[in-house]
Amino acid sequence: MTNEISRRNLFSAGAASTAFQIIRPELVRGAGKEKLTAGLIGFGGRGRQAVNDLLTGTENVEVVAVADIFEDHVETNMRWINEDARNAKIKDRVKIAPDRRHIGFDAYKKIIASDVDIVMLATPPGYRPMHFEAAINAKKHVFCEKPFGTDPTGVRRFMDAAKKSEELKLTVMSGAQRRHDRKYQITVDKIKNGAIGQLDSAYAYWVGTPVIQQKARDAKWGDMTWQHRAWYSHLWLCGDQIVEQHLHNIDVINWVMGTHPKKVMAVGGAAWRPREEIYGHIFDHFSSDFEYENGVRMSSYCRQYPTQGNLARKVDELVIASKGRSNCHDLAGNEPAAPPYQAEHTAMVNSIRGDGPYINHAMAVAESTMTCIMARESAYSGMEITWDMIINSKQDLFPKQFDYDLKMESMPLPVPGVYKFT
Image (cartoon, rainbow, N blue to C red; front, side, top):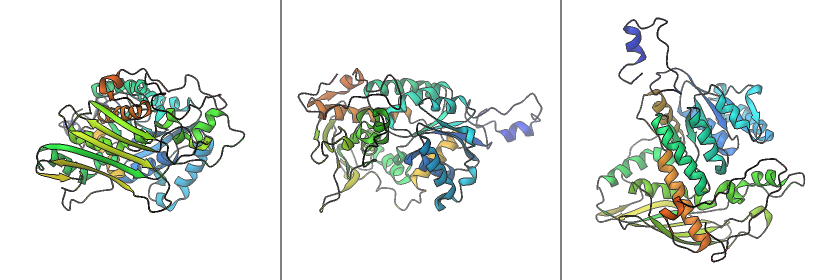
């Protein structure tokens, strides 16, 4: 069923007989206005907000199933959906019956095997390649929180599934919400069409504060449980801040450039994070010098320091060109716009139904994820890392078995010259 042959055309042509059946949206774009259903994998803070954003930004969509490895996440966030005033207008479309609240490391399989049309991925990003691959193999449309992995092996796995999603014409919406901020969309389009001349250099910033999820380890928690409870402090789950957070800004520059950098030289370390279990083994600052194939360079800076004292904060992008400069969202005038966290869901559903342009962010944001991993590995190792090196890297951080009490080694803080890039 195409956009040109709508449901209305079919019925007006006398095609309402039993010989015709409405094609379900998980199989093809352009399914008209029939109701869509979504299942959420990962019911933490980002997952529950994604539910609110989806239902606020769309109509005729329901969330009907959820999966998480922790039962308390499901219980706490179901209460939030039902009781928080921010959900008053959407909670009637959260129809997650008790038998569709799945718990455990394999719970995601129950969502994907169900009849939902959209799978929403909001677990810690270490799981993203495995979950995305399974969703695409099941021919589901996907809302996929960024980043798309934490190591090169995982991102390559994601990229393979991304190619399949394009072949199947499945919609894949990323959580890189700047791509659906109208001010960014208009400005980036103007930059690409020469509004400020030929690009010369670019800058990306996320200079902010720490993300710490737990204050202490419960004595009852095994290693794997602990690492999930404090996932932002562990590399295999979060990818470090340059991957998990700074991707937003680096993705904007890649979007403007229309490609990924060819190499990077980066530095970083832990100037503030104490060498205590709660803080894990990730860096608290990175500075990276990227170079693109055409010679344009991007300087990127990210930092997570506490708010003590008068510390600088900056979350932004900047491109400099032969005729001017732009922060990538300043050439849109007074263009009215919906909040981008909701606009991305509106665009996703329109893509699925055939009411808007087809959207598949899978490969573009996967390349931005690999760009960030490339810089992380340069800072960790002290080496200059090229795209060919990172795309062929054998690094694989993902565990081979899963159990709440599984014993897991905690890697040391990377030391350049000692840490080995593989």
